[in-house]
Image (tube, rainbow, N blue to C red; front, top):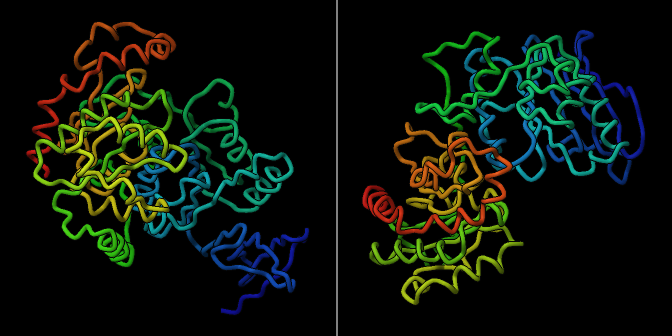
Length: 408
């Protein structure tokens, strides 16, 4: 089949091209020109979209945090089961791309860059989105940016969660579930309802997101650990030492006591800390609060430099413990058992379920349910610090012991 590339627009240093076969568009590329004026159309191009002939095409939108982006991959998985030959484009924020690389259910990752929050760049991005015809748009985020992407997208069917200010953008909207489900995390349940119009088979529904690590990445992780004199990973423990913010971080002293318990109950464990570079000083404070025995087990300087490197190292660990957040969601998607502590202001039902046998969720409500009866979210946020201080490690010491006995 002969394919001819035709310029349909130009605005240095970008060009929008279409490759046509039999008068049908099969490739659209918003590409960057190199210094010599040639088009760069590899995977590092500014924007790349491939349109396969005779295939259904879906646009899935999920911006925000790592856990959200990872969880919404089940939308892609289930669409691929229903329509094996379909093409799925997935819009995510730049800092979350690492968790969905190599994902077999995602054909193209469309990166929503920070620059797109500038009016001119955003409009350019939206115009490119509008040039591609989709069979359906599924917006799992449903905030202003994704509302605009959905609005500009060329599709007869647009689906999202129900919000008063954006209902007019979509053909179908759904009210979020709020009552806890013992069989499924609400974050999963709410996303699956966005697929109701497609009539999925109940017996083939994917309900757990997955992360895919290549063999090369696994080998590199093994080499990384070996270089750092970690040859035996049979007692390798990852600690999510800090949450995504101070309000979602277990108090430093309590976290140190958790780590002390792990190091006391296991024989010669190797403990790694997970945190982002800007949190290093705070992570160091937690380390200093640990006892001498624990400090001898902690390899504070063994730190993965990229998300993919971290994921490959995490895959080598026996368990992950610590603060609920992105690292916990990544561990679950890698099949690593977890024990995590939720912030009192966070609804545990959204990100945890009793059906998850290898994953333990700790929340103050488990011990003091009367504190949470008929309390508004705003009230819980105001009491978050005070309630955190009630969640002493001794409350769940037995649970942590059982967890370590079962998985390490």
